[in-house]
Image (cartoon, rainbow, N blue to C red):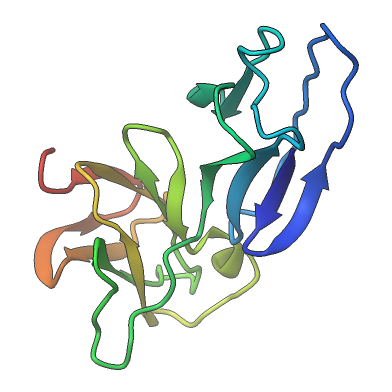
Length: 191
């Protein structure tokens, strides 16, 4: 198996002893875009022709995928800041929606950090957490980030700011909600 951040391998394991459970746990930078890929050189997966092998993938303690019946490989999206940036015309590829989060730095010039989480899987789909940890703005600085995220049923926007900074959320060009300070808001076509 291997874990990819975009196309770069960030973790991998090649050989496993028979009939043993292998556990792997790692923290990854939230600004990456991660996939778990499991491979089988014999093109028969790890279950069921020659044994009862299986795998589980969990993110933040929540099971997001399991399996074993595949041919040469299987890929599981883990999460991160994925989806790419919109084009100049503010459009996204098919099956993606345009997310726009705007924040106003608090009275001390501290930027608000936020992330968008897929409610079904617990996976982070977009975030500014790493960027806001390394920047100090000016009082009332306006920041806006547009991202293309997979069109899904339901997301949660988590705003991590206890100093009362103002924020606003738009999804597919429509105003969804706004508020001040620490907040959790759900959005999507089936929330």
